[in-house]
Image (cartoon, rainbow, N blue to C red; front, side, top):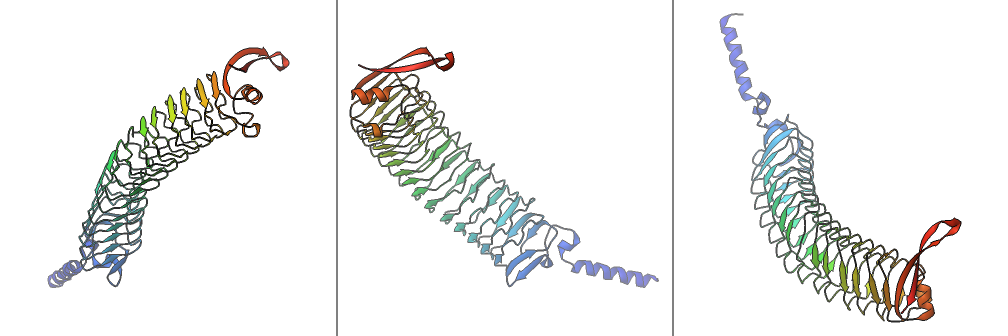
Length: 422
């Protein structure tokens, strides 16, 4: 081959190389052939990964367009208005994203389980979908003021997420941050309800500010928040949901007067809870509401309370004193079982006592009955020993307990409790 032909061939190769998209030459910038399009919407990414720049003029990123791809970063132009369902989900190397100020909605699971460590959500965004950033490595998030809707589980499982700014336009607060690493949060004044599981499992959450105007705290809203030692519940709150603070680190709580009911197991297993003040509006204490609050030593149940759910104070081992208000009409099953009560007065309004209501209260030495309870409504196993039988025979009054070791069946010794009316 002569020199002229070699020179011409080399020149042709160089021209062809120059005409190829940059991505095809091994750089991290994408070319047009990397995207499968439907109109102006990217529906699939066909590239080899790396850092991707989506061309200007694209208006949408379709559902699953980059799902499980090998991209490490993405730049989204201002022409894009929507990011679809699971658009960048399960991208194990995607650590950064730059969004143009045209995006208005981030779809369900858009970046779920990607490796994102940081993101700036543009001011144009008004809604963040369910699971949008769930399971990512985000550390701090600023949500712009125009956002009015944050989806369920939007930032759940973001263990490294320690701080978030929530805009005042958000009025509904769902379970967006459950299982995240948040250490403090201020709920904006526009919020009227804290949704189910809102901060469930946020074990590092130590400071929460709830604004006036919030009327409800949902089921499991702060359950498992082990670092949350105190919280001020505003007077506007009317309801506290089931397991709302279960297994949290609370040391004391005051239930405001607007609350009429405390949900099932609402404060159960709060092992550091030593002080509880019930407001003047509470009518009912839910089943297992304070079960296993082993640091609780005393409780005053005000006259406005009419019902105490089964097991409400069960296994509160240090509960030594209780005042039962005159409005209570029934004491459910196992309400004060396995507690440290030393004495109790059953008010005149109580007409029923459930099975095991005061069972295994070893320190209980004095019980005063102010009213009449029929045998049909006085469960046989409600107290240890023969107290029920003595009461049904002798009526209202104060009964005290003595104990003795006696021979049982087969010659074995057993501890026997006997009650005597004073």
